[in-house]
Image 1 (cartoon, rainbow, N blue to C red):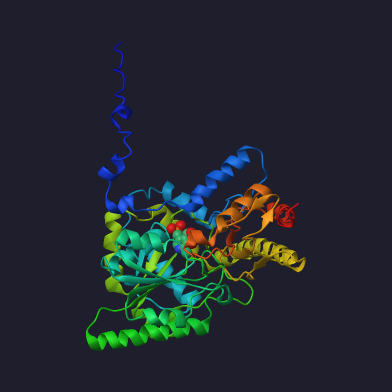
Image 2: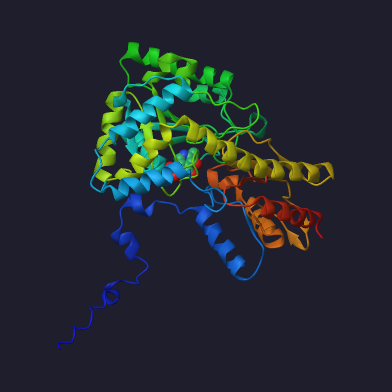
Length: 439
Ligand SMILES: Cc1ncc(COP(=O)(O)O)c(C=O)c1O
């Protein structure tokens, strides 16, 4: 018997020179900023490993034990795999799923789109990237509100120029038409998200109407001047998750002419707690959809065939969607309401906290107004200090709005409920109260 030669130890050839990164990588790669949420996640893991009880409200994800995916999605995906649906999908997606998206938009949003407008991708992220890449030349301007999710990264990846519009708690941290108006002439793309990550707030009909009016007026001006059009990226990945009186509106529903300028980004990740299944789509004017398909195709960022077919079966079944949401939505709302009521009870007791009533998505905006305060011997000077204090003292893990681009040190935090049980939330609130009381 011959013995196999010892494997070549490749690690021997890798440099440990700290300047090597700069010598090796592109400016784009070097300029990427890491996720603050992932950094916080590793702190939480360390605390849990040390035996501390932590209520983890940091990840914008679902714990499958708390929020499993719809049975129909699971079973239809497994069946498709078993039936041998394992080769490349068509570049713009399986016709079954494209048709199902068209039918669902018609049924649930009252919008009819030709099938050419629908591009299926592996989750909402590739659709976001492809929108930026399809529309923005390097140096062209994208306008987006802060706090918001990941626009900074897509701006960086495409070499675009960002105008960040800081929003205010009295507007639910949503951008107003008045705030966007001064940037219309310069913008090539306006990127909006509703229900909004990180705030859980929803753009109202009147404000959206005013924003659409601005975009349409600007495009009328550009048409006459022969200038490039202004587009609206409308990320409504959480549109099925609204609570109470909050309602989701779409730009073409408010003014049909907006169909020419709106790129919808959407998918199953949030509406069906299916973040790891990786099925999303864009709905856009056909000439833009075709280029987005080509961009995504070169990345190979298609959703797998079987998962597309499983998703098609779910979207084509209104009863299954309704039954799923009858359990899921109250589950999300119960967690958000428990947090909101708990925080407002602390406010009633004179503690320096505040929160915005939940309207949508899986997030609550909560304020811990502790800057300049000393609690249990710890002086809190920044949002980051507050975050760490709440984590270490109360096992209450949250993410400051700073991680979503808002620069104020005002103590506003995102509380995300998809991975926490109602019991964990209830158990954490008294710990938070004691930490705020400094005891
Ligand atoms: C507003 C928003 N858009 C898009 C995404 C990405 O969704 P996906 O997981 O389908 O890529 C997220 C995920 O957190 C999000 O919050």
